[in-house]
Amino acid sequence: MADRPKPSPPCHPDTVVTHAGLSPRAHFGVVNPPVFHASTILFENAEALRHPERAVTTYGRFGTPGTYALGQAMLELEEAEAGAICRLAPSGHAAVTEVLLSYCGAGGHMLMADGVYGPTRATADMLLKRFGVETTYYDPAVGAGIADFIRPNTQLIFLEVPASRTFEMMDVPAIARVAREKGVVTAIDNTWATPYFFKPLRHGVDVSNCAGTKFIAGHSDVLIGTVTANKAAAPALKRTHLHLGQCVGPDDVYLTQRGLRTLGVRMARHMESGLEVARWLAERDDVARVMHPALSGDPGHALWARDFTGACGVFAFEMRGGTEAQADALLDTVRLFGLGYSFGGFESLIIPSDVSAERTACPPSAQGPQFRLHIGLEDPRDLIADLGRALDAFHGT
Ligand SMILES: *Cc1c(COP(=O)(O)O)cnc(C)c1O
Image (cartoon, rainbow, N blue to C red; front, top):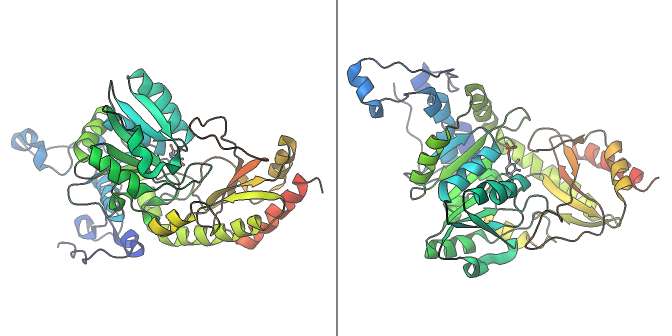
């Protein structure tokens, strides 16, 4: 018995994450996709062996029904066009590397937003450089001005919105429009919003990658990355993915598709609680600024409101003066916020966050210590009380 066809036009993202990629009739009616631990796949006869293109699965590294289910779900959530493909990588950073190696090559040039995730920058500066690709960093505020940076050998424009750590917004459609005119591929790291709140391919971007480690898996127990390429960008991704030999273990794929089912309710709660904590911080005299594009006073708010349908609970704040010792007192006082990297899990996290030394195109200046918060699923009033105690400790009171 076949699965019933999907309704059209496409449903709300809440409905998509609930149903996407599932095909129970193919698996004895079982709701969730099976977990196949597989390397070798056996073929029925010589004829089948000579025509692997006719088989659903041919070798474990190329995927199993579980992998295909998650890839299909991501294509639906991204609202990707026919002919688009999704590939899974063993971490969010592996997904970034896969994007860079798919579209850049010797003698080429890449434009990268100055606010990208630190390891992304390191890969461009070291690995790509070693392979003869030059990188120029641009101010995230560049907009259509990106045209001035494009050279005859520019192969890729890489975006991340909002910027890691500093949360500046970018005019994604303006950049994508210029890139299309000039025939340059665009890619975006969409980890912060996830395709639940922002759909890059619908805004003219060619490739959308995401650290599924964060919100999609959502429980601090999986490393995974997704890369979705539109039809034109698909062949290069397909080839590079094969050449790099990257694949994800079946249990992590399973956990990620399981996390996906609750992405909508979790994101809504992260957003609501995140804004509550952000507004509380923004009202304090000792806080110089809160970097959160969904706050109405944020410099990127208009772009966020135009292009995104929501925000996660990851943002930063900067103190009006203070020392590293004071910052450490704050960090040592929080009880509900964990001190740890990553984000997107159910639990709140805090890290000190100063990236001024990393950036080259437009280094931000800071009046005092900065912290990045991930607001988890706890009651925000408890989180505010925890931060209140920590801020007292910051002031030595
Ligand atoms: C965390 C993160 C990554 C890397 O994800 P991993 O799964 O930790 O490798 C990439 N990009 C952004 C924006 C991230 O926040």
